[in-house]
Amino acid sequence: MSHVMQGSGLTAAAVKGHARALHFDACGIAPAAAHPELRFYREWLDPTSSEIEHSIDASGRVVAKRIERYDALMLAEQPVEPDPDCAAALLTSEWLRRTPPAADQELLRRIRFADLAFDIESHVRAVGYGVRSLADISLSATLPRELATALDRDAPASIAVPSGRRIPIDYADDGSVSASVKLQELFGLAETPKIGPRQVPVLLALLAPNGRPVQLTRDLRSFWDRTYPEVRKELRGRYPRHPWPEDPWNAVATHRTKGRA
Image 1 (cartoon, rainbow, N blue to C red):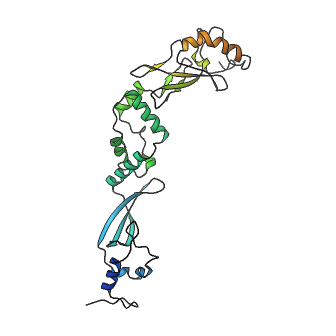
Image 2: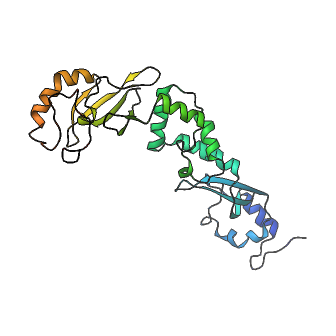
Image 3: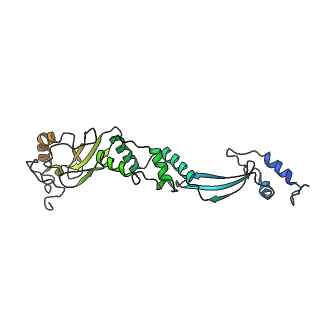
């Protein structure tokens, strides 16, 4: 027995036949504007499939929805809780596709510099399990303890200088390392700091009191012997509140001015 749709003169079988004959867009969904009559007939169509689709929205968050279809015609959709495995796989794929955050890029350069084994895909997947957003994935906050210890030893984030402070180290993609520090903080230091298994010398940007570099060097001893006298002659009148000793070898390293030293 055929059911007739009220006010339409069409049987349910005819509507189903019409649905199968529709032209669909690239996503397999019939455009409502092209077939507005189906909006009134969907209650006559029993779903032939129901599936949960996961995606990442514009904010980088995993969302999931249950979609019911009659063949390729979408009948209904509703939000559901994302599956943890699907969310982790989706977040991992998207994280690897995008440019990592600056902090994670620096961490990866340190790992490469130290020549440490690190399966980034497995780590990101592990971190991504149980979270919902790309913003929740941080490599630096979730390193295994053994790796973090080796990293601090072979590719430290900072080094101590004679003034008592620690200064950050920048790791470049080519494997070189550099650091910026006011030259007064290095008084008495003869040997350029070296780090890592290969004992790579740090390229030091020696800064004037205004924060601008006056010298780039990997040979600190040569700087004190040859270049410092000229730098002192040029800058001590311009920055009289900062120490400019004739003998930098025996001066007290400081990051303060004379009045605060």
